Length: 299
Image (cartoon, rainbow, N blue to C red; front, side, top):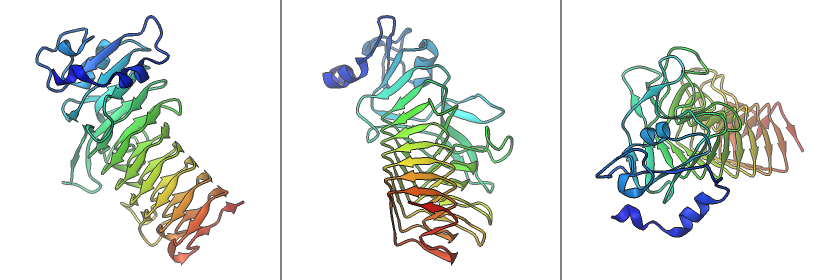
């Protein structure tokens, strides 16, 4: 079986720090004999949720190639998540985001759109090496819990997303790509929300935010990021649209060692109301004022 011949280096990485009581559970969308407790490739689960449900805190869920686009479970209100990581487990792909995806669902029958979010991630959980795409929040209900985080909704900052691509997701209110959580070595691209098209209320480290959009009303903010802390990130080609828009690249955020380039908004094309330290700001545009940065602090 192809899934049984994965590189040993991957499993060496996964098993680093694995305590004696932890279990590794396996997921293969093409598994011929999915059988609890999914502890080898020959009995792997065919969907990620089944393996998470069978896991305990501290366990590892290892996922091989495929697009996982079935199932759904709500945590708050009626907001449905394609995958609900409601335990402090590590969910990791074998071969990275180029070959392993979790796809939500977006309906364009209304504006803003509504649909199924890709992932809910609880405190202490980690998601490593996936593409999260076509996820969407609800467009009604609680603004934070149901209308935010189309790609991923994290319970708090100690929910960690690493080596992931968040592409083509939308949130009616906050964080089209990601809402809360810590993102490391991630790419956020072509995501849309009212506030923080790429992400909102995140800590981002070594991330790339490109072509994200703040949209859906006339006072959108943070095409790339809103209310975030960014370190050594690339913020390029993001937009906040509307005559009252703020911060095409970032808004109300703190940045260190970042590149902020070719972003656009009515006010603060690159950044608005943000603290920026040791960063490069270039070629940003604003239709009203502050092409590079507006109403913030630069050091």
